[in-house]
Image 1 (spheres, each protein chain N blue to C red):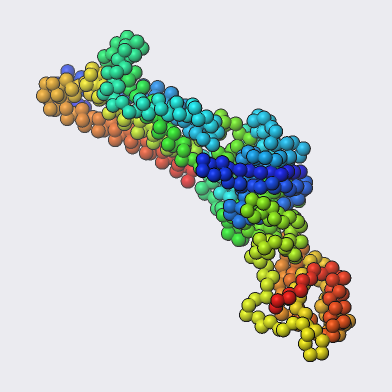
Image 2 (cartoon, each protein chain N blue to C red):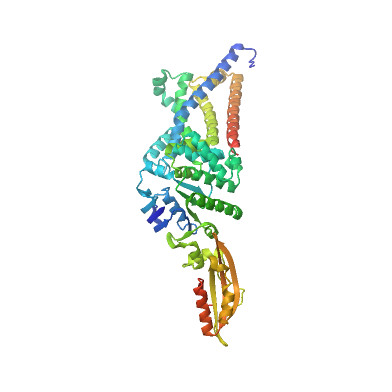
Length: 224
Length: 343
């Protein structure tokens, strides 16, 4: 399918790099939601007047989220190398990249989830409370299902962001299309490779956005 | 069934304290439809939210069927809330769930076994006339249908009390009537106590047994709807009643001079008819009996819940004795009467 001047070696290089990018992004998306989703829920639920109002928890978590988000990813990547090494035993390669990608995406996901959940009308929460729902029931039966279309769009945005971050990680040896573009495209002036990675990233991002839009529309369409 | 005792709610903001409810007391009997009317900002919304503790009262108590709601621990409060249904102005249905699943929602919360819960949902959808809409989503329904789902949902756990928070305020007059009919039907069938708040005196007139008028965080008048309509005691009540039934003589009508006239006196009076007295020909028998002249200037007949009710503005003239006797004759037959002095 991919024909780079009939160079099978290069073709396989590109395919491996594409796979690495997909792998890194998929795994870090999964882990960032594993932590970011509950974190986003807690950020909403602990605000003043909400179901688990707790000013202290809200402020502490909010500050941590802001702190991580305010560090540019390329610096964050280098900053947490000791931690990455501790977790994966190395700081180079695809697996090692997953650590900074996940950690950087967690606060991003948390804020996205928070925004989605805040859009839900208070009346719905009040109705559930009036029926005797506890906090967990409000979260699992009202907040998350009602926000589902918006949450799905958030996942698409997160993935697209992580594709971008993964390319940055690639520059410091993170693997994937970023590394490929940097080594061959930048350091060896192979413009063709550069363009191919750009096009592949473009296709990847388009696909993810389309998938997200379709899924979100499908969910809200069923309700319409 | 509901005892509200000296309820006060104060909202504290950094700059000021806002009193939303000031020492409010009322008591709702079992099986009664009790209305609370007030303009927006009067405190009625806060009041109804204090009944099921969606708002925590600052002072005072709310006792429902013997349970002091203000003293409950969170867990017990949640259990108590399962027996207090609530319906809302904007319905507050979950858009992620079908009609069926929306009605199922409170049963899930209460942990009712699936089989019983499904059976109950079917019954309720029959009751509100939406059995054919079970698989629809709320967005596919009209406002009236949405409120019917809201009612079915509120009744799911067989509550002791139904709280209605402006349930008809977002509906057109015809739909409002059908929703009120449904509420009255439920009230009669299950002897369910209903507490409703509204800013629309028509809602009170059509559905309530008793009414409390709330103004500026205080209850200014409380009584049977019939009594408040026939002789409202405060300016607020008069204005609410006036929105539904015009008590005052329209300005365009010529007003005859009252007091001493040639050959006797002339009085201008407003008579209100309630219930069976509305059906009797009292005016004509008064004319025959006392030989006075009576002229009907203005009248209005309506219905309060199920009781006929009307006002008549009447000019009576004759000799002073005859006029006095005819007035006491009317009074003796149970008519509410009021002299219009300044006419």
